[in-house]
Length: 74
Image 1 (tube, one colour):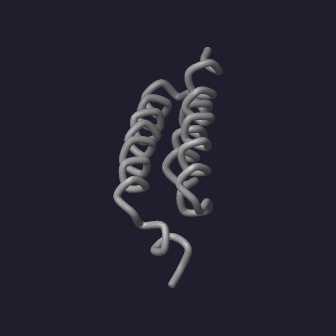
Image 2 (cartoon, one colour):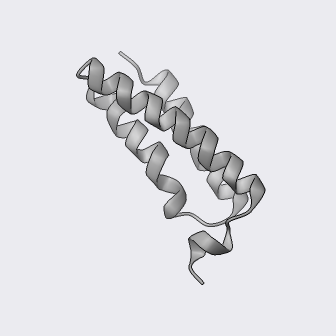
């Protein structure tokens, strides 16, 4: 069983949905405005759960990436 399926719990699903939604919105915003920063951070927010295991690390990475998205704007 892979790491992703092992950590497929309801609390992690909430993180996948929340941070994936934020990432998708950031990516679309960056694409419409031709801005590479929100596009890259949006892609990272959508993809990082596939590479991390553990609830705490998933939430911490999501919070850090969302904070970077908020504070590192133009």
